Length: 227
Length: 227
DNA sequence: GTCTATAGCCTGATAGAC
DNA sequence: GTCTATCAGGCTATAGAC
Image 1 (cartoon, helix red, strand yellow):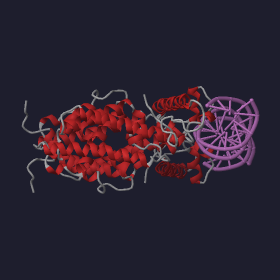
Image 2 (cartoon, protein in one colour):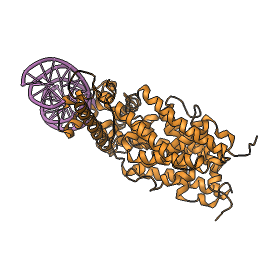
Image 3 (cartoon, chains in turn orange, cyan, red, blue):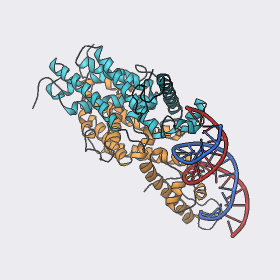
């Protein structure tokens, strides 16, 4: 259940600010509708492509006239914005959870990225919005950037653990190592999206090779530094 | 210069089939216009996104009314089709040329993929059309599939050379090796597209790592087969 | 091969009644 | 918060004159 909120909503969780009697109920109902709109938007993007999202189609499926949506989102771009933020947060959580459940170091890094990959394949459309930027006129908000940084921080930490445990050489303590890792996961996911859109993580020709690919990292960052 | 032709044009190169006097000139002029349309279409896709291609915009830039385009292409999808075919052929040629100029084996494989990558970055929009399938309602024609097979054949050959020369273990003579290689190049290109769209191949944080990534292949397919 | 005209659809967004 | 009505624009595609 996505507990989200409008990008420019002022009241955080439905707290009573104005003088009305019991605004909680109304606010909660409002949040439910917003969640419904976002769920439908995800469906539409999955079926028609990320670019195929339209207010009219969302309204149609919600059983409402298009102008009504403007009470919840000020524009189509605001819907993209909300989808982006919630998606990024969910994906970060998936990666974080995957990492926490595994032995620290290289194993945790692989587990975290696999968990993230699992989420991406289960949320194809949003993942495309997050990482492939298919809507030219849409630019993510600054808040989104902060979440990106958190993901990088998690990966940097896992790489540092791997170095500390002697799984990778000291060269893995570097920005370039993160770029390399993100390139690997991106390649696997892009191939899976393009060629096997229906398969979940772990099936098909591409996603199963990911752990094997990651086990090449010790060859890329050898323990014995060679000039 | 793209010597292309309409997907369903009957006369191959402008040969005189009907009874008119000198149809060559007319046919050549027609091919020129078709080439112009495709060039403009590429520009539009580059600026507005692959999905942003519209007949109206192409007509506007060509200085013509939209209905006139239907004398050259029966539909918008036919334009996508032509762009797809020509693009695939050009990309194949880039890879082939890059391979031919290098020492056979792993070096040729890397050179071919780098040449293809160079082409993709210089033809961003078409490359997206080829490999990322951003237009849900567009499906490439069967001819396109044949060209894909040629690319796979080239890569398979280079991998076999690498095995024969003792650069890779025998396990590289396998479909999975091709999937692995294509995953690596896809990852690098996707990252470059998303994060450094303006940079050519060889600059930035991602494309320079590609050769290094490919030099990990001997670790993935070691010479000494271990149980 | 080019044009005008037009059909018939879609879209995002706003105004204002209830 | 929902609706109707509407604006203003986009688009693909076709018909038919020249």
